[in-house]
Structure formats: structure tokens, C-alpha cells
Length: 161
Image (spheres, rainbow, N blue to C red):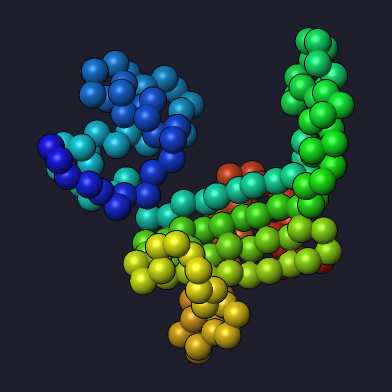
């Protein structure tokens, strides 16, 4: 009680956690992980990495009132959506480190943050990397590609043309 945790979690971990804490079996096929071992103080983490994704290229649009799937679009939202740069972001969080690869329009960027030293992500360590940071970027990029492959993310990473 009254404790905090730095465990890497996803929002969808809440469902198996509630199942676990209430004694209900987690349904088959659920890929999320129960956070109950962290809550009970049995473990400090349930995973070592997080894969984060954001896309503006792959939006499915439909008119308001259409019963189909996708984002309901009105004239107003269409105008707003067209002002957003087209692209994607993929990020990998490993402990205190966060690697971000972006592709928006024709611009590609790599960002690296030490979240312990810079929780607001204001200093991009990839801009002028030290040899240690360059090696970390390489390792984390390999990990990012592996995580994308493992989750079936077929979007080319931002560092590929």
C-alpha cells in the first residue's frame, strides 16, 4: 500500500490482472500479462521491454452514420486529419532507456532517451551519440525489429526506405 512501481506494463495487462486477483481463469489466447505478482510483491516485473506504436498512415475512415468499421469522419474531422503528417512511430522501452524510430512524410528520425536522467524526454542522446549511446541504439534497434516481428507488425521500421 502506498508504493509505486517502475514495472513496464500495458493497459491491456489490467484484464488478466483482475482475473488473477479474483480467481477467474484468464481466457485462452489473451496475450497480456497479469500484474498480480507485482501487486503481491512477488516480482518486480512481468516483462523486460515494451513495444510502442503510433500510425497515421493506416487509418480506416467511414462516413458518420455508416455502420461499417473504422473512424467516423465528418467534414470537420476530415479537415483535421488531413493536417496531420502521414507517418509512423515505433519505440522500444528497455529499463531506463527508450528508443524511438519515426517516419513522418519524408523525414526519418532516431531518438534515444535516458528516462532516469531525463523523464521529460528533452535531450535526444541519438543527436550526437557517444560510442556507448551508438552501441545502445544499435542493440535497441535490433530489439525493436525483433519485437515488431514477434508481434506481426509488418510496417517497415522507420530506418528502412
